[in-house]
Image (cartoon, rainbow, N blue to C red; front, side, top):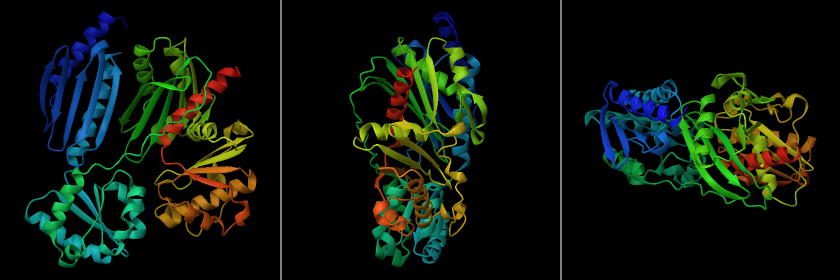
Length: 467
């Protein structure tokens, strides 16, 4: 599409948005210099469509109650159909937030019994003063599994000492401890004030690591990584040149679409027209540039073929997320010949493994290496039940790591599982199944974004140098 036609499509898209009728949404236009912004405001959400130079459009949606960003992306105008589709995704996210009218608060104590009584009192009080709050209660063992589905977590005094531990498990959900006198008196007013303050607090972000090694490859590389949660897809991207970061960006959407990758490539080409190499790392079964991830609608989808058709002068590659991550870990942890990385996302019952043996990624026949779902392991309960608790997740991770040790004997094993924050507890569980002297260095990974992007860049370089 030439620039003149792109300009016209952007103008039409802008007017099309302003003509939309969205129930419960107030729309307004703000102009600042050469740029314009359309605000979309509902009781629960604040959205924005911002129009920047080069026909780059930014779509953002923020939850008013929690302050979380539910939708975020930039794209350059390509077609009206594509632009309208992205706007509809934003509107659907807004409608979903509007339908979920109540703020959800979860109380927890050792058994869930005493907090269930308090939750009933809090629900009665909230209805009396017409607060859109909904309170529930669970036992401590169930908290790790259910906590991310709530907006605020409140811990009873008897488990208040676990606050930092639970915050490390639940990450972005505010976790607060109830004061003993408030809990003893069932002081609903004090709880309502505590919730208001909790929502205003800024939870510290996990600091970005500065992964640096000497990279002698001169070409620019666009690295794209997909981090999927139960709530949304977080697509991160970065343009590297040697070890320097030239561009850094992200998308937050309910679901992944193949067109998202093309949007990212087009956006980066505006700033880096000499870009020739793009690598994508994401979960799923990957063979020859094809992706199968049925939960996201990818059934042997030719991702690489689609992108090559759009950009024939660019080299594209598609890799499994754990292979990219273990490549990043390997690059910055010198002195280890063989290593493994185990990824068990929250709510998943198995996860996946990336392995490096003597400097080489182990993919195996038909890329089956690392698919630990096929390991015939004996568990104390079903993996579905185990994955709901910290203790159960520790059992899954421990038995999987022991299997890796028995087969590969790596010098280092890294893992990511937010339900298993303690390396010491994990090693104690592992020692039940294998002698301590066989347990290698265990490292917990906290920042997946850095490793997946850095590792995918490393894999692109290796692929180009071996071509």
